[in-house]
Image (cartoon, rainbow, N blue to C red; front, side, top):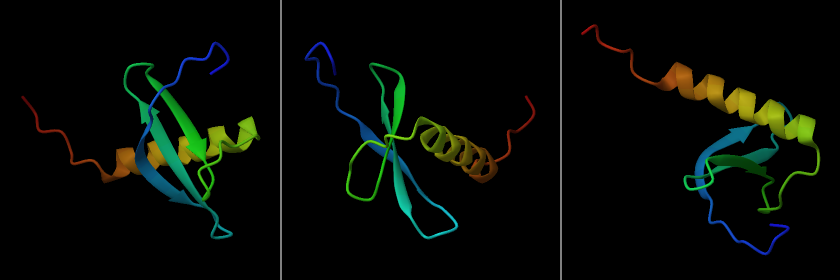
Length: 71
Protein backbone atom coordinates (compact mmCIF):
# COMPACT_ATOMS: atom_id res chain seq x y z
CA UNK A 1 0.00 0.00 0.00
CA UNK A 2 1.18 3.51 -0.72
CA UNK A 3 0.88 4.67 2.90
CA UNK A 4 2.84 1.67 4.20
CA UNK A 5 -0.25 -0.17 5.40
CA UNK A 6 -0.21 -3.89 4.76
CA UNK A 7 -3.31 -5.98 4.15
CA UNK A 8 -3.50 -9.76 4.18
CA UNK A 9 -5.51 -11.23 1.32
CA UNK A 10 -7.05 -14.70 1.22
CA UNK A 11 -7.27 -16.66 -2.01
CA UNK A 12 -11.00 -17.15 -2.64
CA UNK A 13 -10.86 -18.51 -6.16
CA UNK A 14 -8.73 -19.67 -9.04
CA UNK A 15 -9.56 -18.76 -12.63
CA UNK A 16 -7.99 -20.11 -15.80
CA UNK A 17 -8.31 -18.38 -19.16
CA UNK A 18 -8.65 -19.93 -22.62
CA UNK A 19 -4.86 -20.01 -22.97
CA UNK A 20 -4.44 -21.99 -19.70
CA UNK A 21 -3.05 -19.01 -17.76
CA UNK A 22 -3.94 -19.30 -14.08
CA UNK A 23 -4.98 -16.39 -11.88
CA UNK A 24 -5.83 -16.16 -8.19
CA UNK A 25 -8.70 -14.00 -6.97
CA UNK A 26 -7.87 -12.75 -3.49
CA UNK A 27 -10.06 -10.92 -0.96
CA UNK A 28 -9.38 -8.80 2.11
CA UNK A 29 -12.35 -8.70 4.47
CA UNK A 30 -11.28 -5.61 6.44
CA UNK A 31 -10.65 -3.51 3.33
CA UNK A 32 -13.53 -5.20 1.43
CA UNK A 33 -11.24 -5.39 -1.58
CA UNK A 34 -10.51 -7.96 -4.28
CA UNK A 35 -7.20 -8.25 -6.13
CA UNK A 36 -6.06 -10.57 -8.90
CA UNK A 37 -2.61 -12.15 -9.09
CA UNK A 38 -0.84 -14.19 -11.72
CA UNK A 39 0.40 -17.74 -11.16
CA UNK A 40 3.49 -16.35 -9.39
CA UNK A 41 1.52 -14.23 -6.90
CA UNK A 42 2.26 -10.91 -8.62
CA UNK A 43 -0.52 -8.33 -8.89
CA UNK A 44 -1.71 -7.84 -12.45
CA UNK A 45 -0.59 -4.58 -14.06
CA UNK A 46 -3.41 -4.71 -16.62
CA UNK A 47 -6.51 -3.33 -14.86
CA UNK A 48 -8.80 -4.35 -17.73
CA UNK A 49 -7.58 -7.96 -17.57
CA UNK A 50 -7.95 -8.00 -13.77
CA UNK A 51 -11.54 -6.72 -14.09
CA UNK A 52 -12.32 -9.34 -16.74
CA UNK A 53 -11.02 -12.09 -14.46
CA UNK A 54 -13.04 -10.73 -11.52
CA UNK A 55 -16.16 -10.62 -13.70
CA UNK A 56 -15.60 -14.25 -14.76
CA UNK A 57 -15.02 -15.23 -11.12
CA UNK A 58 -18.28 -13.62 -9.97
CA UNK A 59 -20.24 -15.34 -12.76
CA UNK A 60 -18.72 -18.72 -11.87
CA UNK A 61 -19.38 -18.16 -8.16
CA UNK A 62 -23.01 -17.25 -8.85
CA UNK A 63 -23.51 -20.28 -11.10
CA UNK A 64 -21.99 -22.67 -8.57
CA UNK A 65 -23.91 -21.40 -5.53
CA UNK A 66 -26.89 -23.47 -4.42
CA UNK A 67 -30.30 -22.11 -5.39
CA UNK A 68 -32.02 -20.04 -2.74
CA UNK A 69 -34.99 -21.70 -1.09
CA UNK A 70 -38.22 -19.72 -0.86
CA UNK A 71 -39.02 -18.41 2.62
